[in-house]
Image (cartoon, rainbow, N blue to C red; front, side, top):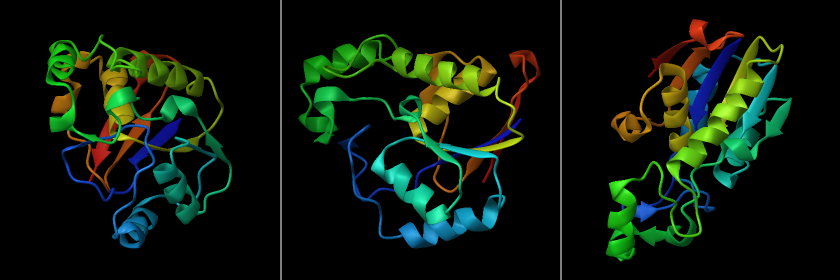
Length: 187
């Protein structure tokens, strides 16, 4: 199965804002960004899976593919009490505690990176059993990094070394057994 994985379009927030599952505004370049995806992606997919986040739903709607299913497994990390706060406004003791082991420590009233990884892993384990030939997934940077970790057996503490840009996509070949998977990045 060939799986295209794309990140939603840019948001209209500063880089210091902590957001995960929050509804945040999209950048003014949305229409231009959609055209870039339309020009690079195939015209047909057997199935489109998307995060239920409004920023992903906006891209789904603009791309106008049929056969869309929204899955909570494709949602970004839940930053709980830190959602929509500037990183400098977050209690530094809590932040430092989390930063020391962001893989296993849950954000207050949120989730850990390991929990996000387990969601992504479960989703892709189920997907590989489907009979689709070509699939599109619209999701978030955290989910995409977890997909890299899943497919390439990268330790979770290293996934922030992976750049996940806008307007680029991964193309994965999912086999029935994970030892024959492949992945490539298209910019």
